[in-house]
Image 1: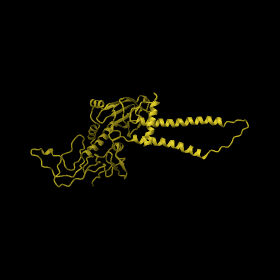
Image 2: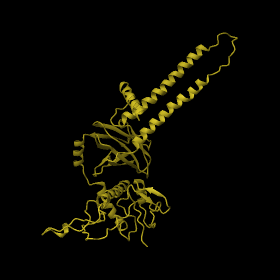
Image 3: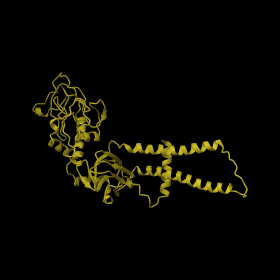
Length: 390
């Protein structure tokens, strides 16, 4: 990585020295790296083009026809020159590929502590939902110095999120989640628009990204709170009676959802896939496409019955269940209960054994006391693939 670091630094200096009004400002941590690769490619391609033009004029003068009866002579090209002509351009093209691949993989996966914001594109607007419930249209507030990940989907046609100052550009596709992340480096308001022709009013699908200092962003959050995505997803989950099948007990007719997100799921076909946002979304809309092993295809599909915002809320709720599961997952075998102080209410006894995680975020699991010498109860099946009992 050292050569790439040196090249990036050199071309950042060059880009800063040659900065023209034609180039958007750099307002994200990723922007200097993208610009460095761009100027490197521009310098190589421009240098080769100039060299070819100069050689054309040089050879045209040197090997011009000097007399009317002069005949052409056969030229023998040195083997070393032919090898050089093959190897040197190949090295440059491979450097383009290697450098670009390095940046792509570095930008493809957001940091774990990234602030996740749901984005929905439709003709002709951008809708954003923050984790704490704030909603915005054609305006996105973010904190400076913190990674932000946009989880995006389209309600109608293909759109494309483009913020030039952040050097991010990602398609927004119907029925499939795509992601892009960035980290703003300075406060300001930056232009955001759709770069994919999506209809007659495509040019009006524009907006702004407002980067705020962390304390200003927190102030804005406090003034716009409307209930978190997970809480709204929980209400919708219960309204649709999903909690009647995904109960997690022995008679459950659907997979166990806490801890599902991010785990491997084995299907009835034998295939093993990762339970990411796209799998959860597909399982809500078309549950018969990928059925978890051990369960029957009895769940009704909700394709066409839910809006994209409602689907995002349900997905956020199921992802939140994974965090609740980790929070309550037992880590030690049960022990005998300690003597209770005189006058203490028995309901205040803390659980000491295996505790079944709550299906409802924001509520505490039922308090239970493990008797002395009790055999630990196995933890609930993970990956959402606990087999259905006969």
